Image (tube, rainbow, N blue to C red; front, side):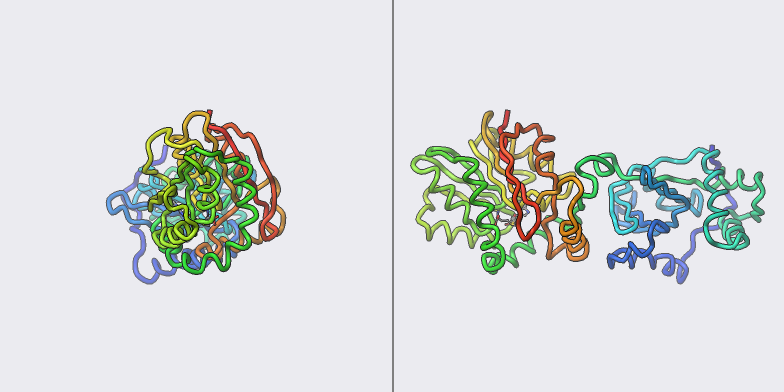
Length: 392
Ligand SMILES: C[S@@+](CC[C@H](N)C(=O)[O-])C[C@H]1O[C@@H](n2cnc3c(N)ncnc32)[C@H](O)[C@@H]1O
């Protein structure tokens, strides 16, 4: 068991505190890879303030086999982040250019002793420096003897962080997380809405049309398009379900809605189309309201834990036996160099390169949808999947 001594020094303030924060600045500037696995940034939430904190921590040991990184709560039980982690408020770990949602464990004393011993031998710092710093943190002279090391391991809590299971293995491994908030996405698409057709539509048109053809919308069917953008598919869908059918559209951006409304009116199908501004995480439609759901280049804008929530909403508004067709940038086994470069671009410029490849087929299957068709294609050389599935 670790003990809670009272003589330990308090955490630093002023200049030292600012110096210690330097790695966080570099990580925020996407230069975290410079540190390799030597430092990580722990993103956590204050228990009382609920403010986001980014704390740089030295990694004392790293195990590439399970991606576990071990850090010490240097100020013992006075370490603020330790209490936040224990309260379940560890939000993210940034390490070596990647970011993940962590799970954590506290090391038992025997394991902590072994980690300390290895660290003293392999940290690359002279033993006298390591011992002096440890002594300063512990509040008593640390001489590197086995007895002192055990006492230190009992006093200093050592924690191991590793990626939560869904991101450390399987098809979701390596899939980029989405950092921006929905409010930021909304503001971004409001800005983009006027010029969107100039730089996106000509490239995406073919892929989207093929996806709609795969769904075979029929006369009289009720269709929902999620993330309708500038509304090209709304027009195709409204024509396909005539006579008697109806199309609903939901998009986060009022700017997109205005552009789409003009297009729908211009195409003479406004009597069959009803648009709403809202978030796909909470759709304003009753259960089982539609026969078809269509979503193109939108699901990959949601953060990984949100993807099943959006698909659950789609399944909810579909009637049993209804069909869903989703098109997105796709992440397959062993992504090619071009995909990896694109993902690097997403890491560096997430507001500009906001779509990131996801394992689409897996996402739909995990949401309990029955996949009936998958067509693999490319867009700008990147893999794109169109997947059609039934709601059981
Ligand atoms: C990349 S565009 C694709 C638009 C269109 N489907 C296409 O293929 O051209 C993504 C669209 O999803 C919308 N969107 C983004 N986040 C959303 C959310 N949380 N809920 C609903 N729509 C969202 C954006 O406003 C934008 O119109």
